[in-house]
Image 1: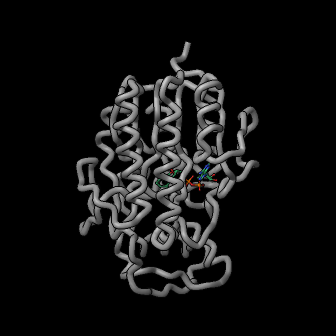
Image 2 (image 1 turned 120 degrees about the vertical axis):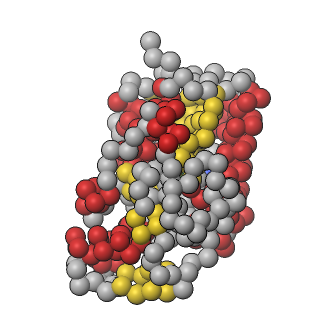
Length: 305
Ligand SMILES: NC(=O)c1ccc[n+]([C@@H]2O[C@H](COP(=O)([O-])OP(=O)(O)OC[C@H]3O[C@@H](n4cnc5c(N)ncnc54)[C@H](O)[C@@H]3O)[C@@H](O)[C@H]2O)c1
């Protein structure tokens, strides 16, 4: 019999969470989702998911679900995910992301939960001047309130689960893309570029465009979560990306080539709070979890378009 039978996916109606639910169901797990639908959509959920409309800040609901529904593994995806919004709304970001995580951890005490997998972010790292892959020992000194809330949640997750005797894996996702990724003007440079071209607007690049990102396909993120569930590794923090840098200029070029080679590009001043370079060194995830990214940006970006 598989080690885990019933998973709770917080934020399961969101972009990554909904793919994760599909992956878990495919792997034979029963899946319960808590989502407040602030960003997610119910129609994103695959058939067979037990959906609870609720907020992870709601103490009694979270405790009831975690204690009494037979959940043995938690995949914590729910968060406010906008770096830019977190700058003005740092209180809301922290309240949702940190206190939501603490509420979930508090509910784990005395529950059947055996493993806690936390969706963290490359935003926990300090900025890197060089477009080179960084490993998990790179300095964690976030430059945005969002990064601070994700780092703080990581630390609490490791600390509290340790005291409770629950396994804990932290996955630091890099820029994730894929079909169904929703468009907002604040999250996800790929969807922002695609939408601007569709609207006949010029692409806006902040700074000189040489800053590099690591774009990882959502199916690889799901695979990393499944490995984090299956491997007999009790604790650890892992970068989940591709290890390949793509500059914002190059990204603009790829999207223009596919959609409209004549689309204009304009450069504006740097955006405060956003990392210059963020590329994952994935050696640890490869070695310990057996993770390997399968999709390359150039081949899969058409899904978003
Ligand atoms: N997309 C990326 O590039 C990326 C990169 C690094 C880390 N992450 C992390 O991955 C996770 C999922 O991100 P996503 O891109 O799928 O974002 P998303 O906004 O699509 O999904 C987040 C989901 O959480 C829900 N949610 C938010 N606050 C909630 C609350 N208090 N209670 C219940 N539900 C709540 C939203 O309704 C949404 O469905 C987040 O934790 C994010 O920080 C994402």
